[in-house]
Length: 388
Image (tube, rainbow, N blue to C red; front, side):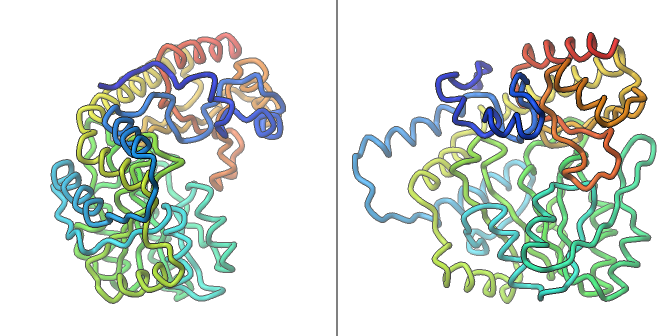
């Protein structure tokens, strides 16, 4: 069963989000409530704990690899949750989601090539692209009726130029919380087909989808020139420090290429803790995850209603998916330094600056709301007092 009580305080100082040095470096103080890293403040599912405890109780850590059971568990989960048919033999295992993206960039593009990202977007995308000496090409999202949408006209112009070798898609989108509709994705694929452009789809938040939205995987759209990152239990089950990444494609030549790279670097298997945790999560974690999703949806709804009622001058973009929410504080009329001071020194909030995601307007911030609702309510009441 899902439990709301936060993680033990005696180990919390080991977590990056609570690191005093980092908080002081970023926010100028460590006297803040951390909402800046996308992990959760809840105990993980009991079946995962039990699997890990059984592993430890053996008192033996000999070589063992069980990717077949992992891939079967991921496939069954996606069939049940998204009616998505995946062939368990079409996965490639890598150390993590970011490792997957880094390997794909290096395998399928050349130095100097353009990799398109839809900004504002997860800041690690740009780091991975530029550290591989590729060029990040910004396809800036538009805001229409207080909702982010893809700029398809610019997207086609950028692909037509011949300067883009890869599209790095984020679905659901971090940080703006969009769950791209099937129609939007079909339009994106149609343009990519015209220019034979490879699409890499990061779907790590695929299961955190709120009422009113439906997730569509790139793997379901029959676009042969695509690879999808499916199956990391990191965000679903709070396994950020022990999760693997799983790349999926029905295109054998693409799959063989990335598998050859993974095998050549001995990156194609996880450790026993990762394996046992992943299998337990996908085979026995459904009840816990459904309750977690309902809880965080209730939290999202409370935040959206509170901001609309109490702080309407702050624009809130209600997420359709992910446990991240995106704010525009422009309506407060503050200079960037004043806004940062209000948020950190007065409201004691550690939010993620929008600039990290490539947002040029310094009034934008992101918040991770996978925390106890009572704690979040207290934080927003303090924010209200700080603004009023």
